[in-house]
Image 1 (cartoon, rainbow, N blue to C red):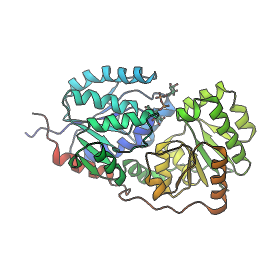
Image 2: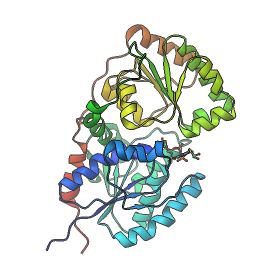
Image 3: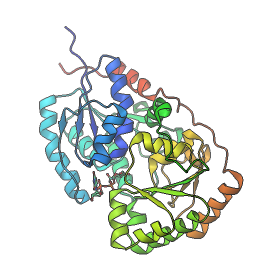
Image 4: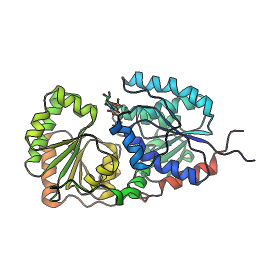
Length: 364
Ligand code: UD1
C-alpha cells in the first residue's frame, strides 16, 4: 500500500491560527495527513482556545506548553520540546506559517534533522531588524525548501537573499481564505455603534513598551474619540503597559471602549463596519485591504507593501500630527479606494496543497 504523505503543521501564536486553517483543510481534502502541533506560545482562552472554536480548527496532536518568556527562552524552549515530537511523528515535511518565535524555532529544528521545511507567508520584509519578526522571517526563509508567498514583491525579496526561484511559489494569502470563508459569520456590532466607529489595535513592543511613546499614542486616540466612537481590543502585553503607565483612565475618561482580546468572528464584525482601523498589526493591514476598509498603520515601515500600493492601508508612523491628519482625511473623504491584490481569492490553501502533493513524497 502507498504510504500516506504526512505534513506536520505548526502553530503557536494568535496570528498563526487563521493562516493554518485553510492549509490543514486543503491537505486533508487532498488525502494528506496533517497533524497539528501547538507550541503553547499563546495560551490564554482569549488568545488561543477561542480561535480554535471560532475557526473549527482540529485539536492539536501535541501542545508543547512553552508559555511566555524572553525571546531566547521562548525560542529555545520550543526547540527543546519540539525535537522529540518530530522524532516520534517522523513527518515528510514540517509546515510553519508567519513570523512568530514558534515559526523560526520549529523550522530550525526540522532543517537540522534534514526534514523539508515549508514556509507559508514567505518573503515579507520590513527591512527593519529591530522587529523580532523580521529576524524570524529572514531566518525561516533561509531554512525553507518550499516558500509560499502572498504578494509578488516577496519573490523579489527572496531572490535578492539568494533563494533559488524554483523553491518559491506565489499562491496568494491563506489568511484571506479564512476571512472570505467566515465573512457571513461575522458577529453583528454591539448596539449604538451603527453610525460608524474607529477600531484600534496596538501591541508592537516598539509602540507599547516605551511609556513616552505609548502616552503620545494614547493622547492621539483620545483626540480621535472626540470625533467618533472608538473601540480598542487590548492585547495582554498592551494591557500591562497601559496599567504600568496609569493610562487606562485617560482612555476610558475619553469614552474609548476598552475590550478584552476579541474572538475571530467578533473582530471580523468590528473591522468590516469600521470607518477607520488604526493598528500596528501585520494581519489587520491585510484584512482591511481585503475588506476595503481604510487602515492607518502606526509604524514607520511595513513588510506588506501591497496593502499600501494596491490596498486601503496608509503608513502613518508614530507622530501624532501625522496620524491625526490622516485620520481626519479619512473622515472627510472616506479614504483611498483600494483593490484586492492578485490571488487573494480564497484559494491559497488549495494551491499550497496542490504543490506539496505533487512534489513531496512520503518517507519510506
Ligand atoms: C507575538 C508575536 C507577534 C504577533 C503577536 C500577536 C513573536 C516574536 N511575536 O507577540 O509577531 O503579532 O504574538 O499577538 O512571536 N500573554 C498573555 N497571554 C497569552 C500570550 C501572551 O498574557 O496567551 C502576554 C505575556 O505577558 C507575554 C506577552 O503577552 O509575555 C507577550 O507575548 P509573546 O508571545 O511573547 O509576544 P506577543 O507580544 O504576543
